[in-house]
Length: 277
Image: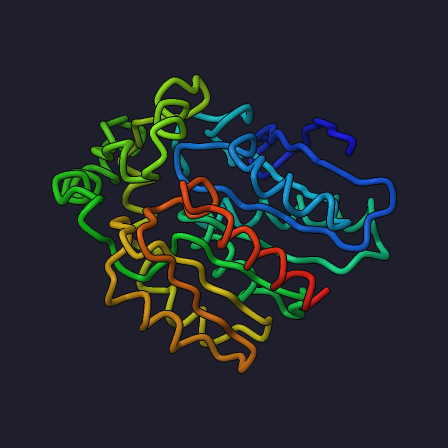
């Protein structure tokens, strides 16, 4: 497995970091779209599951996240993320023009992935996986954060406020939580504009799902509090394509790939992508 790091110029001349992990003779390409406050380097369990299966993994750090440029955890418009992903996808496809493409989006990345794939004129993807997803906020997202973001996003869009997220919401694995807390690239604040843009993107999850033509799998921890449980079923029902799967993992929190019981979600991801490659 060969790991390479590079950058590209996203929209508004923002430098976006990305990295790839590639086997000797790849049979498919998987793009990972990470969640709020984190970065591409937190997906090694996925990398170590899929690269031995013959997939090259491509993962970017969103603007304002990880090693990419931009004000920390800030975005002018939610669509900025989609435009960055479009540039990133072109680089990946130009590098591996012969490979079928799969997309995996987690949490905020699942919002980006769902809106992004649905917006493509030609959905030229073999599969889409939405992890830790939903269409309405759950109890982990504090009401005060939503209120402040809504009130101040226009007047003070770059004002940084605490996210209010308890790090324990991600996993029952204490080592994962400890690593998350001590990771210098993980952010625990959010600007009012990003908070507002994320809230504004949620109502569009259902209409976007209704435009999907790509085989789609949802993977949810039964104890994930980031999205409201009622919205899981609503989102899944809205997915228009017939080839769709909903996997719920008992005793798991938000990051099913980083849980104590991670083997089943990772194997399901591997089997899903292999079946559609």
